[in-house]
Length: 389
Image (cartoon, rainbow, N blue to C red; front, side, top):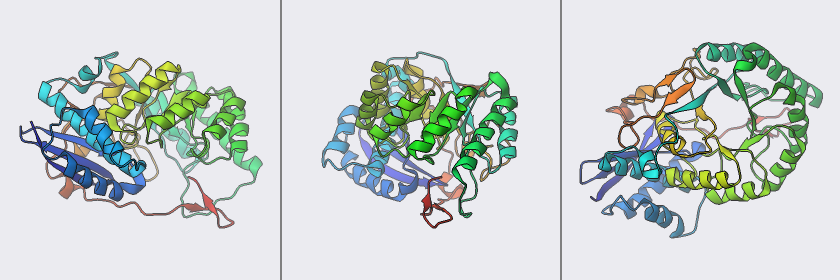
């Protein structure tokens, strides 16, 4: 079998790739480089020039070639590598008639626990969506930002005491709304300074969050370690890491308890499996990052199925609030773009047993869902500086 073409596909806010073969088998993958999809698409085209006429089966060989031939790396390039890697595993699984997890050691579990998304501009909206998710069967809620997802067009300012106290009150209200039957996965979106991150974490420890995600920008492993050493709740981070070596450096320093592995950014299924093994050696659990399409979830499920240190899976439901639709339902965002999507029931998603990824794009998906380019913009502070949100 030989690869005949590698085609980037812009669909809505996503970047997919289709890899065709002369055996009539087509594999699909997704790039997770959010703000740099156009750059990743260019890399996909360049990598396609290498892959055409190659055997798709030696995935580890291709994975190394695409990263080591020039030794220039970065998120956009690794997003392209990830998309290709996922598509090659899809081809191999289909060709051999087995799910990808069978090629990675077999299943550890039949289904995976997931957490739904909450996105809210007000405290009242956040509490309402938490209750809705609990009513829809979720046993964990994530993307839960106690600093809220306010409009980016509105300049930001709060005194320190109000900033912290308002956010602590939001966590308290969420915990009161869902009780002890639902885990809260607190998401900060890198909005705090190291000093603020310590103060806030200590203040919310009494509400027993499952983890505390990305409290500060992921620029310094040592600073993340300093925060982790001073707080009583576990840190989750890594969603913006594009290499297994970045995880290795943070693991060695003891700066994380839950590894947020982005399968569509860290080198695909090949890269994610390496990271999961590293995490296992450090007694760290894996929480795969997935703010993307059902294709990304399908790739995550193949990893979730076969690793012993899986904790919980991010599940971007269609009712995420502000900016999406208003129903906090259980359907995956973007599910209309695919023939089938993984099945959710009572807070868990069943791992598919179909060959390859077990998912396929609908016909004419590009025509039905044209590309939505991402603009370059950030929220401003009242003093004119930039605010991470």
